[in-house]
Amino acid sequence: MAGLVGEYEVKLDAKGRFMMPSDLRKQLPPANQRDFMLNKGFEDCLTLFPIMEWDKISQKLSKLNLFKPKNRMFYRLFHQGAKKVSLDKAGRIHIPVAHMERIGLKNEAMLIAYNDRIEIWDKSKYFEMIEGSMADFADLADEVMGKIDDEQ
Image (cartoon, rainbow, N blue to C red; front, side):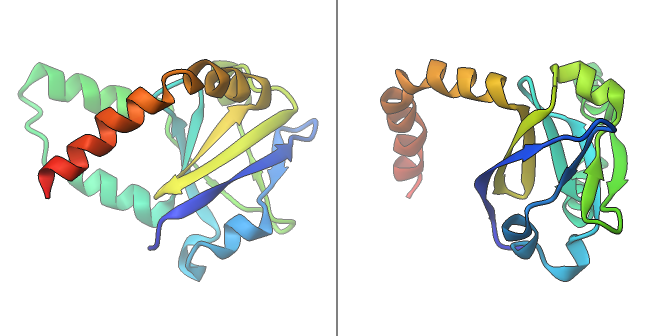
């Protein structure tokens, strides 16, 4: 699958559903357009993985040595709260209340698509995080991209 890309603003209805943007859906192969795994993200967001991408990650994680305490803890934390979700007939994804409460998701969300996943952020929290990080962007770019250049 080619890397996902884009930033999409969506509104959640009273039942916690949002319409999957058609531009985002078109980036997914047909086999990946319906079923997803919803999980918590590394920051204050949720992560939506196309089910085939989730399966790839799960295969990698299955190779962890679970006799090591750090590996077990990571495995537990990564999978904690994971839930399979599917587009309904109207093209909507439902986010369970517990997941919404976990990140303080209200009625406006941002979908941030990159690589093999889609992050789901409360709109105000997303922009606070971005604004708070912009001052360090140049240093971050140098640190991250400099390492890529060094590896070549």
